[in-house]
Image (tube, rainbow, N blue to C red; front, side, top):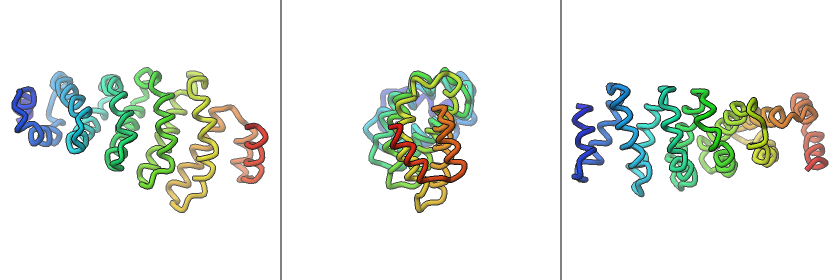
Length: 220
């Protein structure tokens, strides 16, 4: 069935493309590695569609493929399309895109994302204030994952974005949502370590928030 669906999606007849794609996503686990390469090309094409349903199905498929670390680099090669989706008005699409990035990053392949990291971090900062709590949470966690992966590669490519994240993360550390507040505090502490600001890290660990704010103002 999976191979038949692949054939249908490779044809020029558009009538069956959407239902075939929906079924294919459900049976991706049954395809071998070489067939998954064909699937990735199909998903990439639909990722760039103007149809939210096609984009949603493509993201669902990428989430299945991203579990395989060997596919991380191939998926990361489509980061331009994924970055564009982070600006989408549909919170569900944004959340799924964040999940794809998170799954790829957890494969620990730094090479797959190192060139994308600065722009990814820049795209994430506005999402800290998203109306969707799930999007907020995923964006903060992804921001931290990027920092932790690149920490040993040198801070220069990401230093500006991390500096600019300090104030938003500090504010979110007092958010009404406990999960968002906890994630923000953890990411803020990670930011201080990333920037090698032991003074800020010390104040955060001691929960000396007023002194932390004062220190930020004096060094800004």
